[in-house]
Image (spheres, rainbow, N blue to C red):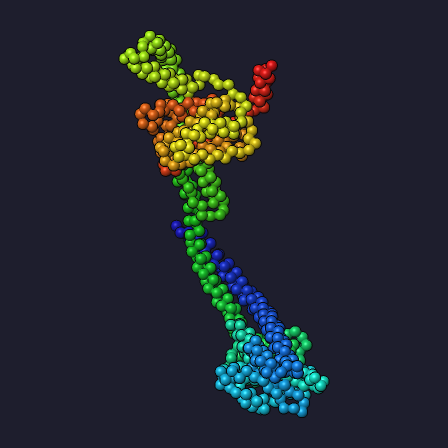
Length: 612
């Protein structure tokens, strides 16, 4: 029998993916490299142009400032109204204020130049006035061009320690003769401008074609001549804003931007090696190749495990379904795919979550029902006991009081009878509380302002709480709607809660806070009573409304206060919730339904009949 050749689908997916990914990545790599190169070229040209324009503008601003300060020097040099000592003092002060200035020289036709200088500055770098004059003798200024109104700027550095420039401007003497004034100025500001960029070489070419400023300070000190900028003379007279060019300097291809400084014949420029400018392009190509290999590797791995990734969520769903069938709702199916299977897993998790919530809600409802039935049973038992015991207690009390009337005050039996009377009244009080808890005594309800009820309760317990070091805080919401309630009974409940809080603090300093508000649903009014007492454990919280349950010592409480309060609130269709934990205090939250329109009208009718 001829065997059929079996080729698993995972390998089909693998080969198909490899072919498609290789072709797509190759096309994308080539296209991106070409587009990036074009975009990078445009970007480098634009960037060099922008940096060049900024450099030219900042240079013009600095030189304009120097020219204005030089005019100030000139003004004082020609000031005839000042005595020589005053003029000398003012000029010394100008050198201090304009600390960049090294020397200032007046050039008048037919006269020897007059030079003033900062002797202290020259001395600090090992120079004297003679050095300045010698430099100027070897490098004479084009006075004819300058006197015609053209500013002149050159690199006049004569010491490594003091890079400097010379700026010369035309000037009219008091006799209206064409003269000139020059200044030797430190290059510090312009050198900082040139050294700002760490990527581009920044430079300025002076009127003689020498480097005035350069990123490399040594080239400035040597006053290197520029011979590698194409068409430098044209650039010095360029009318356009800037020009970007590609050229060769010392065998290296460069991209440079040039702009004429609108001050003399200066040219500002920046340049960068093309190799550095396109370094990121080569890095991009290298990264693309690495990504391509990585994608191929990922495609192999993904294809090999693709089938398992498809079937694994289905297996997990099957296992989870069996667990849910056994009643386990704490199940979560991990969703690893964003497709129909992933949606199915998410839907399954949502269903389990909702089932778990409903299961918990059902258990809570069952516990509440059991508690309600238990309280109802307590009420029925209490009602029966109260009914059977109340009459005999009344007889005992009556005969006791009758016997006491027949005895003299000093009779030894009188004390025993008074004890019987006291304990009988105590039993009667317990029976009355049981009757209230069992709701045998139906109370008449009227429209009531809950804030007024709270204030009345606070007025009664204020003194007792204050003398026991308990501060009272209240926060009552305004304009609360009325509720249908027996104000006296609700007052009794609030007093009971506040007194219980005070007793729980056992004389320690604390705080009781009572507040009212309308719930968002606008269907219930909420009253909150909280304290800073010791709090309650979970076991105590579950039993506090049971009759005769108390945490107080024997003889200090009957355990019916909260039970009676619970019965009063149930009679008012109100809810009571307890929030407490050991060491965190206790909060009782009461929620009363609002009075309905029919109840309001009925209450008003009753009031009108009583008034009539």
